[in-house]
Image (cartoon, rainbow, N blue to C red; front, side, top):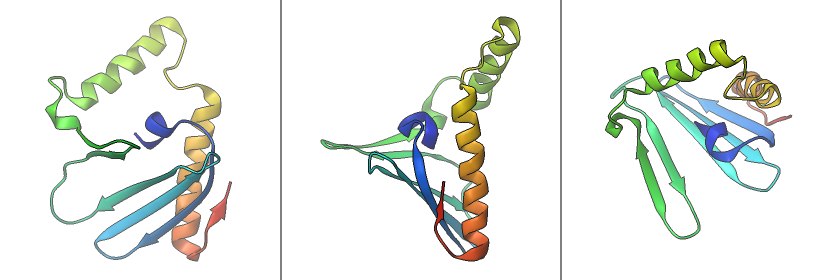
Length: 114
């Protein structure tokens, strides 16, 4: 969801963790900051909170009439039919590197530059 909203171009990642939560922060080349917060206890719902110049918007994936997993599967099935993935290879590699950097930061306690 973070890359779908902010796009490619994350330049550094930091992560902190404790027994209950993880917080990952990415800084994009245009200065935008994106965060992911995960909890190991409590509710299992997720969504997105977008802070824009004129308003803040909460996106609740559970409010959409189609389950989010079904929407993902439609994109995957379309790729097998057309041969064209919904996310291009460069962005896919950046997402993978973001996740690797978050793990590195969580283990080291340092920011990781991409």
